Length: 398
Ligand SMILES: *Cc1c(COP(=O)(O)O)cnc(C)c1O
Image 1 (spheres, helix red, strand yellow):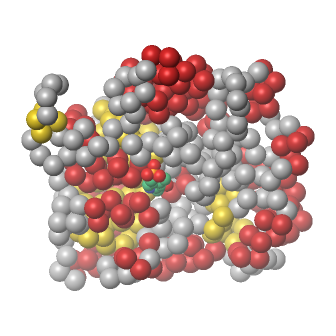
Image 2: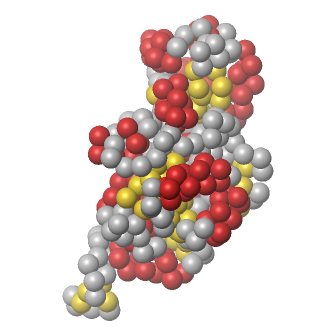
């Protein structure tokens, strides 16, 4: 999951190389099938070169602004702040929503560790929420159950931080209603779900703030980077202020609170502008791969795919399946056999409430534990040859 391989070109790519990047060559097919790799289009060279030619390589420059505007246009978010990574965007989201020491925050038990780390950065306490067995995400039901449990223990959660896991949107409308009714701030970890929508509305635009990630393994990359999204310009402007060392004025060194150095450099934003231009094609290709898996899934007894809620369109960032007890191989056996066949599959995240630094916090999450023990991610990279994966699964569990 966290490993990335970048296609290396010493000079701008030729047309043949560009074609090779979109359609796997015979040599590529003989290689391992990668889980998730960055896909770079020729405009990446043009934009990054412009930064190098003009010297605008750091946090000031036209690409940062252009990247933020393009993200606003694409997602429909009112305000976007480009950041150094997805984790810093999550930290800023916590700060800009006034979540602080002693506050209790509902967090999914099944997510990447950065989700819950951000809660701890501001001194707040996670309360772990179980997930739905079909979508693998928290739902209004699992959030309400966790809320009741927390209150019985005398805790009053101030916020809910929800992750759209592997690009599958949380069923947000009932969650938005629940948070409004219970007076909880809603924050979205949309690090994996850029390009996923619910009834036409983009993930990351439902809560008070949201975080995106552009790490090398995500659907688009800036090398390293992230963004904070908000529909509230005041929240975004507070995040922007904190991300630039809380500096006031343009000259001199005046600062009005403890800030952070969390802005995205221009060099990374240049790559981001190119990647955003490619996003519709990358999303379409990932959806095509997922469609090919969905067609074959009926031939693999015991494998059950993560399901998207009604009315959603997924970005198909990663294909996730459960290996249940009726499968010919168990989860770890299947991972080993895929590895031997040159296919890079990975187990899904460990449940966060079982990690040593989070064991003392509240929440009961048996479904997350079961999914974590049974789940795998299959290759979904645009350059991957999904037919090799289909052939291998036909042979192993068909
Ligand atoms: C990748 C990821 C992050 C963190 O993003 P970085 O850019 O690596 O800091 C946070 N949450 C989730 C769910 C992620 O997948």
